[in-house]
Image (cartoon, rainbow, N blue to C red; front, side):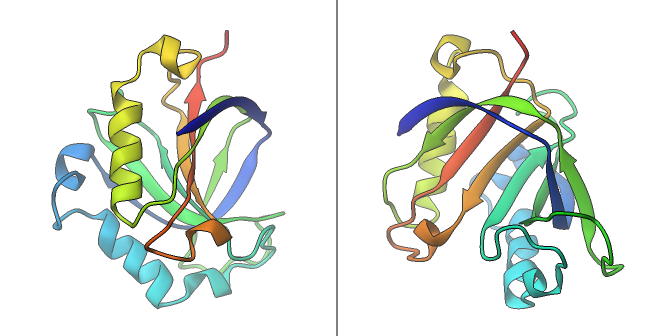
Amino acid sequence: MEKSHTKLEEIKLVGLKVRTNNKNELGSLKGKIPPLVQQYFHQQLFNKIPNRKNPGTTLCVYTDYESDHTGDYTYYIGEAVTSFDHLPKDLETLTIPTQNYTKFTTKPNPMPKVLTDAWTDILKMSPKDLNGHRAYRADFEVYDERASDHNKMILDIYIGLKPD
């Protein structure tokens, strides 16, 4: 994976969320994330989102961590928006705070291998490998035009870091 360091300003998102943990999600088809992702895409909920900033670019966010990657967290899928005005009642909002990140860009691989391989590597990394300590405020994956071929997906994964 390619790695770089970046700072992103606040991001406003609209979409769906669920509370879960890695124990329930990893290596299981009974997790809460797959049905949420299916609902989002099969019902084309992205088309209901007003004020879309980058139509067709989906963010999957891990936030509201109970502790670290071993505890409960909120998984959120949606799109960035310019404002929260005129939202349908069945969609949720999330604001990712301004934060420093280590950004990873994966090599092309099929889904879910591209995702599981990347996260397996990231979870093994030391603070030195990550260019800092994880903040556990918001980490996210970006699914854009490079993710349209499910056999050769390329993802950006942003890992939030504590301030220096």
